[in-house]
Amino acid sequence: RKEVEQDPGPFNVPEGATVAFNCTYSNSASQSFFWYRQDCRKEPKLLMSVYSSGNEDGRFTAQLNRASQYISLLIRDSKLSDSATYLCVAYSKGKLIFGQGTELSVKP
Amino acid sequence: EAQVTQNPRYLITVTGKKLTVTCSQNMNHEYMSWYRQDPGLGLRQIYYSMNVEVTDKGDVPEGYKVSRKEKRNFPLILESPSPNQTSLYFCASSLPVSGNTGELFFGEGSRLTVL
Image (cartoon, rainbow over all chains, first blue to last red; front, side, top):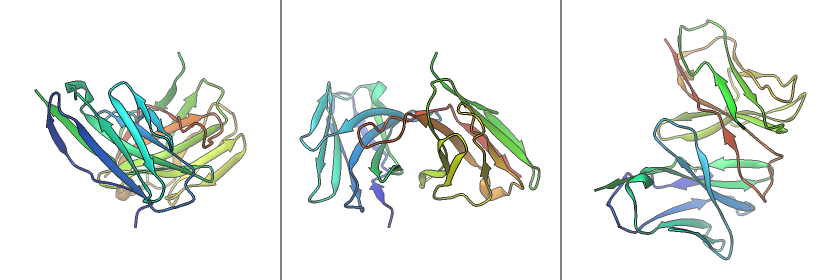
């Protein structure tokens, strides 16, 4: 079983839609979590950290459920420019473990 | 401009021909790492370095070597490349990785094809 698992998608949504991605992690000792964004054939970039209390950055909301060992990313009012792959990342003992990514395609 | 620079960006080579992918960062970061990215498998760590002269194996180190003689450089060496090393490679750097900040700065990637 992979340490960090995501639904690879693709998620095809119309502009303006709300879309949610989930990610599960197997190591209960994982200390913190992050979402990265990767545009096609480009390098990943940090999108946001995920805090236990949940956090919001504009149209993006990240949540962590330690009891169920999953994290989520909610994107409201999707824009064409949100089309990308979203990578879930867990930090544990000095290492960052990446999920395989969830592909999002926002259509006009 | 703060950046991580990888070279070459694209390379086609043949089995067994030694090659080196260079990585350089200008942010004075202590931590550097190499990843490979393959469809359906995500980013997998090859090797990482916590500081100069300190390197450790990641999850998929077989067939690769690294060195960290200077803080800014972290080359990836394929002594005898094989077709299963065809992949997209990313170098990344950061301040010491901690739970407080998960921000890795990635290079633009090096697409390697081994025939």
